[in-house]
Image 1 (cartoon, rainbow, N blue to C red):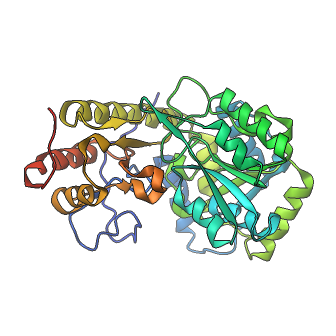
Image 2 (cartoon, rainbow, N blue to C red):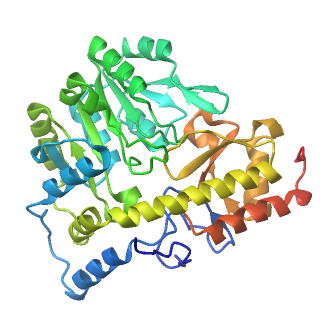
Image 3 (cartoon, one colour):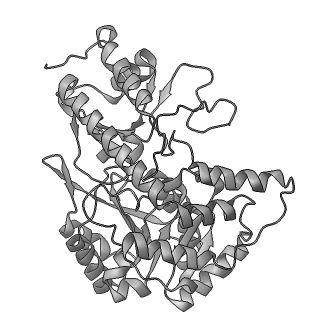
Length: 392
């Protein structure tokens, strides 16, 4: 296997990065879910060739775009998809909003699991639908679905938004979980939108499994949202593919895209996507090995220096969800400690709803030197805090 250098630190100054929008402050951000690891060199080379043309005109999808996507699903998830069922949409959140606007009515109820990825929840509320949140059960540092509560919510809902693997907890839904969800959806005629953008970061011994692959009902009553954005660190290129097996719903969604003025992909999107999905398997395998080491390093450091912290045993995504409630400090105190004293930014639990209070999310998809520096800063700044103590 080719050796890749994931330790290279890249300055993102001058790139208008949402993650590094620190206004000149010395902050290490382990927050926004993009990587500080550069795109694979073969993708950069491909984009460099396109860049040298010097003409950034209107762009079409390649003739084999859908076939390339379907081949990726088959190789990585053992999921057989008809290429004709794949619809390009720049962003998953756009697809979710378009579904809400065109397939539901104001006042309809939509269910999600909480703690929840907030842009998805916000899309429900801003489109004047009723958000029904089913709180996950947290036991022994592990999250489970409260199926009794979920069924109660399904009785009142027209749609369920699943995030798989789950963000922010990193939970990998078992086949049994997916079958139970699918059964409830069929029982109450609930449509499923499944956001699978983190599908390629499954750190268990099993492949990612899409909910539509185990239920004929869900296959015909779902949008499965996929993207190379997280996998290859190209969120700024805005590439997503929505798998819609139902002919009627697929055509309706295509019309919704046209009505919203969404059609051509960006100039760099096509070569980036094709190169990543055709040639990125070994790079991704090496990256996952590197991230496993990062996960292990963070867990070991926390056990040694922050015994009151517990890392949720999720197994998915390149984020860790950390429970700090045993420290008996508020989120305001934690943020002051991390940001003002240590110079480290995380994603704060309250951003994911009330069920996120007492937790924070850390993005470990960064060179290990960044990770070690961030956690050393946090540890070394403890003497300057007020009300923070460790039970070492």
